[in-house]
Amino acid sequence: MRFQPTLPDRTGHFGPFGGKFVPETVMAALDELERAYAEARRDSGFRRQLGELLAQYAGRPTPLYFAKRLSRSLGRVRVYLKREDLLHTGAHKINNTLGQGLLAVRMGKRRLIAETGAGQHGVATATVAALFGLECEVFMGEEDMRRQSLNVVRMRLLGARVTAVRSGTRTLKDACNDAIRNWVTTVRTTHYCIGSVVGPHPYPRLVRDFQSVIGEEARRQIRKVAGRLPDVLLACVGGGSNAIGLFHPFRNDRRVRMIGVEAGGRSLTPGHHAATLVKGRPGVLHGSRSLLLQDRFGQVMETQSISAGLDYPGVGPEHAYYQLAKRAEYAAASDATALRGAALLARTEGILPALEPAHAIGYLEPLARRLPRNALVIVGLSGRGDKDVQTMAERLFPNGPARRV
Image (cartoon, rainbow, N blue to C red; front, side, top):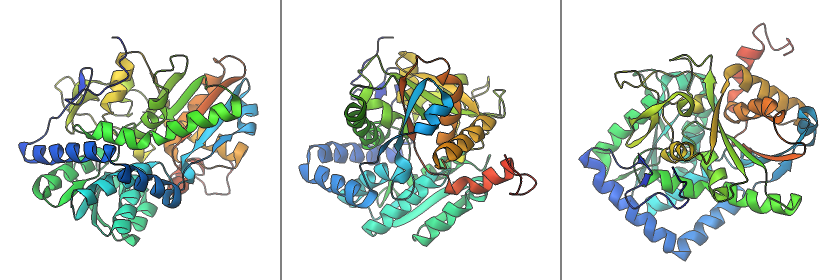
């Protein structure tokens, strides 16, 4: 399939992927959101207000940091980190929630709801709700609440109600299910702040556009420091918002390789990973057609990942299209690889990454050996690792923190 860089089309499709597959109850809310976003894009006041909030509240632009010791450790390549971990709330999620929060106010909504896995999107949504004086409820799987307890406390301190989801695997997929059910009954007063480039149109485009500030900045910054574009863009992919935010402004630069790294979990056998682009098949999940992990009867399969933010059986439709059109490549990194990546970055650069981007750092080790000497690589460092310290400790120091990795 020939790559078309201007998608989605007016029906929200990226080639065969995307669209709207939702109950009739929420179609009017989606149409309202689409109209509000189209108007906001043309409104210089909206763009100015969002730009000011990104700069003065979130902390943009984020640095493009040359990881000198990491590069030396890997050999052959020069690695730059796009430091989204330095944003307010500790991850890229605030880029999107500020934009959607402004849209909610514009539409007269009084309440925000969100789903969250790693908790970072929940924290970012709760933060924006507090900033704009809105009610907030975040749906989170019980298992994710256990392993991301720090972020649960943060959300509650910010005034959000955190609702535990006890169905299914009690992770991100199930949190999405409950958030949608709630939205169906509250659409008049509630805006559903989806956290990734998933869901029905216009969410995949809307979230992509708000996150594209990552790649737009990186493009200017790498030209300034290196005098040229990178050879490779590398980012982790769950739903895929941080990756698409980095990739999208480079989509027409065919010499720039774009590589997304999914959660390979314990192994690539069914039920032991969350590598949707590597192992998934076309289907419909949470309002759009994309790739998903499903059995031969079309039932959504269980997933597993050390990273709560990547533990999802679907992926954004634009990523599915990028793969089909051969514009981007996708690979899987195991839990063990992610832990090695986190340890490597911590010890070479004094930066503790979240377990999500640690998958990309871990995958960079074998990738570097296959790249030309002095290749330029930009890695999307989507979040910081504070939230994952307990998980890392359980895996890396099973006999207590005195044991060395």
